[in-house]
Length: 471
Image (cartoon, rainbow, N blue to C red; front, side, top):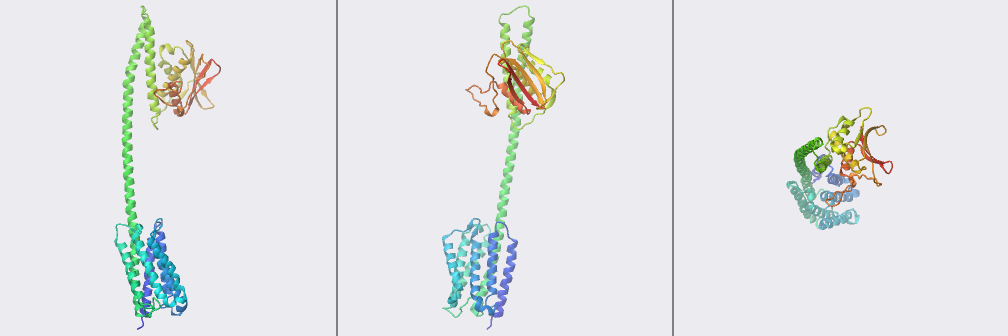
């Protein structure tokens, strides 16, 4: 009985199947699975080409291309193995799989030898079994295809198992055990085996396409979980940031309250001492040592007040990126207020030189006032005993800013130095590396207003402190 028409229909159906599944697989092509899809499509093209040049399709090509047809089928099987065993970082490294596929690669070229043409059906069957077994094992060991959907994986495993069974049965039906010298042909056994493999190939194609879909579903679940974790982490960071912000605000409020509660009694004590000092000046009776004791108490209280102001000022400036409102103010008024912050015995020694025209500077007034107070106190500590110091304000047209100058006469030959904030070292036991904490606080205020502090010594007796603020 002539089975050629039926076999031709089976082959054309198989080619149509390959085209349909190739289109589906191209639609599922992604960056993470492109290697597997391209290798699988190349395998389908090689197997389809082998059927086109098979003796059943073109009898005239039997003698020339039959060996090519057998070799292309086996090469397509090797490509399928690579597509199944390929993972993110290359092919699955399993000794048994590698040995089987190496045997198959070594045996496939035997189908091209004319001297073994009578055993070509046997060679194709054995090599195809070896490739199918290697693919079956690689599919089980490749974690790339693992996932919650086991149906697609089971379909593929079943297809590979059925292929091994059909090919094993085919061995005993080819030469030298039977008359068939070729795997495909027009005999009943050849038609049956070809039809069975085409049917199994359909399930294998369905299984591979389903594996691609399951892989994409797995990646979507993974991405959803990662986005969920990222969202949860972001919300946690937001909550922590809000918590820290609330805590910072509470601490700032506490510091402001503490500042008020500490400074207020000190201010009251200063006012009381000033009233006592005024009463002593107008009193007719003289109390031995009372005036000296009053001056010491006033100086100690002034020192405590200034130290507390410096600590609060430095803590405020180093608090972070908080910006304080700056407003224009008369520079001479700030200088006069800083002079009044000194004790009465000291501010009498400070001679202010008022500029011809009013000079306004953009600043945080309380910061600048404390900075100038610090410079006055430091200048008084370095100046000759009972000598006056002079303070003036100049406009620096070159640097486009305002310079506060405090000039004194000193007995020392050594010039005081200013140490930058980055070089400053704090310690509870060692003395400060800078000449004065007040000068350091003034330097930080100048830096906050985009300015600086410098020391100019014209000769061994004259020294000038200059605080520059950018306009």
